[in-house]
View 1 (cartoon, rainbow, N blue to C red):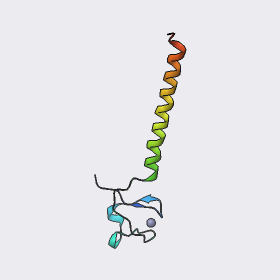
View 2: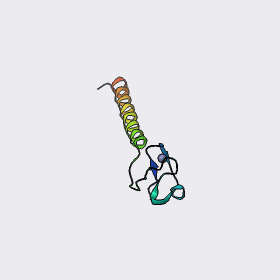
View 3: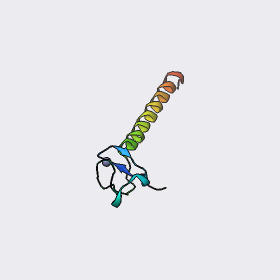
View 4: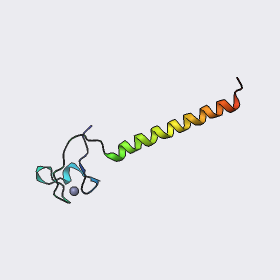
Length: 70
Ligand SMILES: [Zn+2]
């Protein structure tokens, strides 16, 4: 997968074709690194999903404790 150019300054994704010479952002002139850097909101999504799954797991355990009499 080709990394999507991400401009930190403009906080937006850019098309490879939109980049000016030397990989500069057309908006602010910042040189966009072509590294496959994970955007912070993707990390946030992963963290959020993990928290949600743990929450659901907790609910499941709670349900078991209430409904299963050992
Ligand atoms: Zn920019």
